[in-house]
Amino acid sequence: MKKFIAIAAAAMVGAAAQAQETVVWWDFLGGGDGVRMKQMIADFNDAHAGEIVIDGTTLDWGVPFYTKVQTSVAVGEAPDIMTYHASRIPLAVDQGLLQELTPADFDAMGLGQDDFAPSIWDAVSADGKQYGVPIDTHPIVLYYNKDILGEAGLLTDDGLPVGLGSRAEFTATLQALKDNSDVTFPLGSVTADGNFMFRTIYSLMGQQDGELMTDGAFLVGDNATKLENALAVLQEWTNEGLQSTYTDYPATVALFTSGEAVMMINGVWEVPTMVDLEAEGNLFEWGAVELPVIFDHASTYSDSHVFAIPEGNDMSPEKRAAVLEVMSWISKNSLFWATAGHIPANNNITAMDAYKAMEPNATYSSLTANMIYDPKTPMAGVAGPIFDVMSTYFVPTLNGEMEPSEAVEEIIYELNDM
Image 1 (cartoon, rainbow, N blue to C red):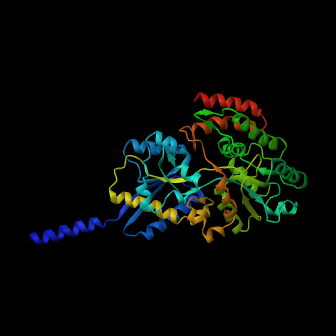
Image 2: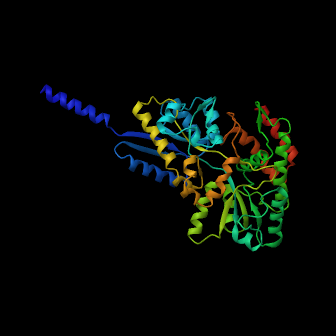
Image 3: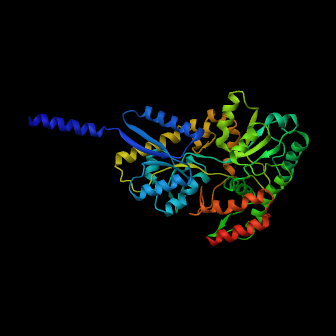
């Protein structure tokens, strides 16, 4: 009898050693990219059947998500893994919400610094430590209607819009569209949402080597002038009828997809919208390309989705190994994630022939060499206070109701007052 009990106990220990690990997952991914990530979770679970299973939950994007994370860490009910924005990492580290991912962790994942663009790797670091595994980078790009541009003689031999090299050239293209076509607007922009327009404005600052924050102070030296320059060109386009006025996000997409706006500045995450409409026969021939050079050189604002491990989890070695496998596998299988429009962060994916054949993704992916991220401060990032302060003044300025110089003066005062 004792021998039987001993054998049974040993069997139970062996079974426990082989037990499937459940990884509790939170994300904020809705829409097309949410559909794709759910598919990747299903693919991961199939590939790891009996070993690891992801138990995924999608929460509301933005402030609700980050508030939920903060509360869950405080009460010891955080998930094992979560998506995060790179721009929010400085605040999360300041709040004590994220675990460091050590060099040993990256070795276990088979990933490292050389697998990512320098700007992406830096975006998930703070104080010399890494706090996330980048999944992608998701910049804004210029969408364009090839049919209308072609009819107007405003496409290059490479099928790109004419005039991407300078402010004068691009403005001339917009003016030609206004003068010689029946479209409502040459360019559709989300001018009713200052938070969204931060992306375009910060890109134009970057084209002048402008900095939002220098040594802890906002818009010092000639950086205020560079912000004013960015606002001035966008206001000029609106005043001249070259850019949509007081347009919210859905209306901007509708203007472009209906052909009422020939071009549109929007995130790469709208690529699935265009692909689906085109497949249904409900869209013109279209493309997407890096933003035009309006000032000195190419520069585009971007952020990254990253995987992070929240604090407060006392993981067993087996659970941590499972979490690292989740991050590693999705990074190494992120070619499918590119169909959401995002540029995979893993260089090995963008170097694949299959990615190079993916359009328009392959065309705009070269902008990773010109990307800029938010300044590293707890006040920056998605739904952060910098966004809120600046957006208050962006909307009236872009729509011709406030002078750029006045807006910059108010922004400097409020940002430094924080």
